[in-house]
Length: 87
Image (cartoon, rainbow, N blue to C red; front, side, top):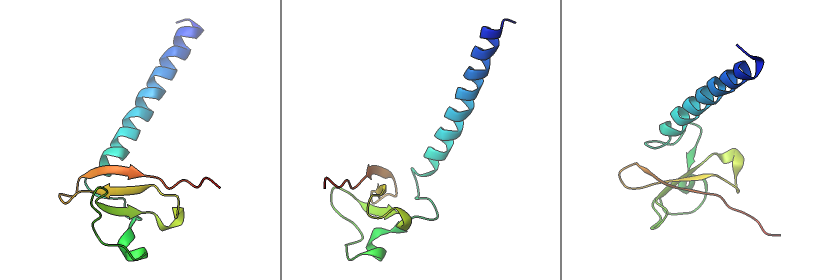
């Protein structure tokens, strides 16, 4: 096997592994937020459910930037929101 073919095979396998692991981890958040995420309404004074955003969850360590994960009334991930400062 030529060196370029070997490198291409290694890169292909690496991409496949990372894509599979990334997809598996991302699929976990579609039905429930990660364990370390907290309901935003428990951290600040907001309603549990915000029309257009859903129930928001965030990792307290990443406040105020996010990501904020929004779940609908059926516990399905419907959006991911970041807070960006333009100062």
